[in-house]
Length: 446
Image (cartoon, rainbow, N blue to C red):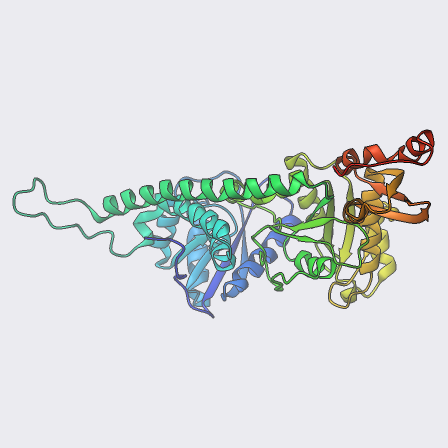
């Protein structure tokens, strides 16, 4: 049995959204998360109604909210003829069941909505396993309302003791067994990914990671920078899989970029844990390309949410460039530049682009080049003219500034990352060695 299931709703389902304002939250933040919830449910095909805002002074056991407010929400659902109620907060399994009994409707929370979106967008084996595991762990304590047949019992047979096991107990055992299977499968897939990552890191090529809030246009930018065929969609969490590609041929020098899962406010902890392997690509990257949706009204909060996740991952101090995307949708460019400055984005580390039209993409290439060069050593090498392998190695793993041929030697002036410099170290003083030998020399291939 798999809970990577066909959703229990149909497109066009009317859903009443409920946002909860806790004492520490201001009204602006609640309005923003409510708008974000509407975007999430629309991605699933719901017709969003509301949202209805409820202030919460102190969490209640039965409905999370007080019974009076619960009755008000139930009445509002009747009035709007809503088929579902979706909470922008996490409900306990018992609270979810209580709400369904009170309203006689399907009731879900933000976490289940995100799980269903993740299930739709999982493409690779690893992503599918991660999502199914997160779903199983979420649904395990909610089995009583996940299937309609759970109240039935398995009939006893002649010669057996008791009246038979309840269906829910059989399902629980089956889910627990599947969770164990998924963990084992996921460990195997992640071990394979770790091996490939180790192999990739063993080759001295600069690595970068594209990060940012969900739907900021990371995958669209990735296509421009790498000419990779990655999935692009104007909806939350279109990308779940870590996609690593070499930078486009016009980029002089080797480097690879990884596109990762987008960040979001109130991302459930279980999903953060599930996608740790994807986020590891960000941790291991030598530089970060932070993509911001320049057209978003919530630009500042999205920027802060991404910065917070980077802080949690321990990479906030990693060399980072700031790419404000979707400028084709921004009427006032001067205001955008002022906003970037107020967020602390240094002009020399900032680009304003449109992944849709291609405007400003060259500036991103420039920033990546400057970042890599700042992390590399500028060195002059004297390479024997017949060592084509070393010349090619320099072009793949460095930024060649100039080449000059003289007396069987190619003098190469280049920026080379420290990891690649080791192999080339003998050729830093190769010309001096030749002079000492009077020009007669033999060289070994290493």
